[in-house]
Length: 363
Ligand code: 5AD
Image (cartoon, rainbow, N blue to C red; front, side, top):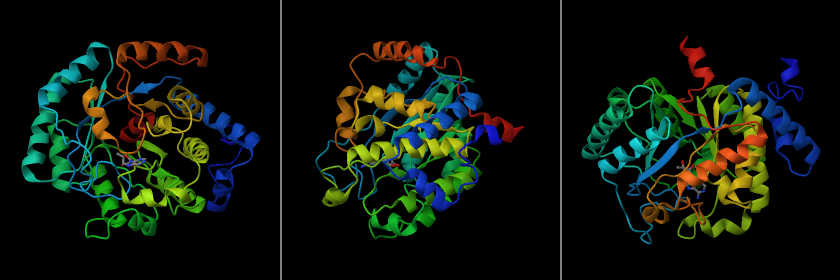
């Protein structure tokens, strides 16, 4: 064990994690990233796993103070894709030997909507077949709804907690009933109880957030042991209340490096889980490709190419300058496979990419 953790991160206290998150020590960062990368390759292999993201609707009943698709933003056109486009997307993904779709949308929990999603999952299950993973990212729902969606054939669920600090959580959400960290955590538990492979995560570099908060986030994740984590920098959106605090934010460069350190530390704490190179990281400071490469070298093993139709991507801007797919995704993926080669990596094909930890827990 000692050998795989020369920096002794698995035993690190909150204070020690804070020190590892602090900027200004490139050599220490390099050692951290090297350790994380070695652990990733040893535990999950060198491959990059793709999850194709379909942002199928931006209709949202929530009003989170950081998010560009909050219901009070009247500056976007609201859309919902028909089920047929999603079935088509599954066929597209399968025909290229990939095995994942992530359905993400604004949050809604009215009965007619949750039923419609149940039917959609059934259709996608049929289209995808056995070895295909349906991943949902549809926010807070009742335990019953989570169970129905699992039963209908979905495999994984992503629900970020956004931050593990209840005070910070209240500062970035409206002060209305229904927006507490307590409730969020109950939902996350219910997701796991329903039998999903469970993903969560936080935003990095939020207004009012300290390194102490981020160290606490890492310890929360370590203790909770999700199957997957997606975390990325907070990026301001002009039409949200948090935009007013943009002057107090860490610079994009700082948020970029902080996000990479968070990824690397988490990989050292939970070597076997899936960790995403987030779209937000690819939208901030560095060109998308370099940011992806940096995240992979810091311990991430998953990325989520966007399959949302191009004419809707701009209406799903959670934050300003969100990275959008190119016109030719097939070509982009071919290029990606090419530039992974020198890293000794490749894109996983015909492989749903369940985390090894999930199988060892099941077994
Ligand atoms: N900056 C970065 N990430 C954001 N998200 C929402 N708004 C922003 C933003 N302004 C993230 C949240 C949410 C996920 C779907 O997108 O973490 O859970």
